[in-house]
Length: 370
View: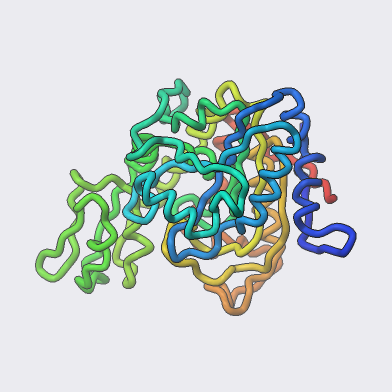
């Protein structure tokens, strides 16, 4: 059976602005029904606050309307995310909260408190049994598990390890504690291509775990210290950091899907997903910068099915032609796979196929425009 995915473009008028359309998506998609069955529910709004210096994340004004709609329905919303594995401005709760507020997610703007889901340093979590192909127990941030209703609000964009990041990544990776993030990255061991390495040391500045050093004017990675966060891959200005994409990226995506299953355990009927197809940047919002969007802004999608909404999002992106000023500026074609064009070694279908196999959702969908 096909899942329903509701879609709104970004057109607006005096009669209905874009914020009104967000509420309409939630109503038509079935979110209102979830809250009517769960009066006074604590609602975890899982989003990405954006790294400091990044500007591609979802605008706080959109989140405010989502929050206000939940309050109107009698829910108790809070904004949340879990701390990061890599070095950055969101690796502990204090820094994470400061970054969120500086990026516009203050209480006065969004009308909801921020609760970092896995504690001060990422050590607050529950062990959830999964019995997946690769994951047997998942380590999910405590406040996500304790919430009554789960609402993923994801900025849809490219990603260097999974091809794209949408509802599945926002849920599976985003809701994992630091221990859970480490488990998902554990097979990703970067290596240095000595021919390309210039010994600039940029990778050392961004390694939170002291795993990189310079020897004989070339970078060197200590595999015992490396946790596989792979920030060094994008940071390297010379493209000298590589991994075994054909093997490791497949495992990464499968683990991410299995963690998504763990997050939704016992909460599948109380979960909802919204994807913003705006400022579709080529890489994750975890970097302190964002490159130009690869395609024009498309719209907003909503669904109870995380697999269907991600499949629909990819399909809508692949109907677009790359923007001239982007990393794909010179590429054209009616059947161009946008994310494979950015990351030729990553088959993004793996996360969707594995999630479907796990029973999380279906890739078959019916797109309903509002």
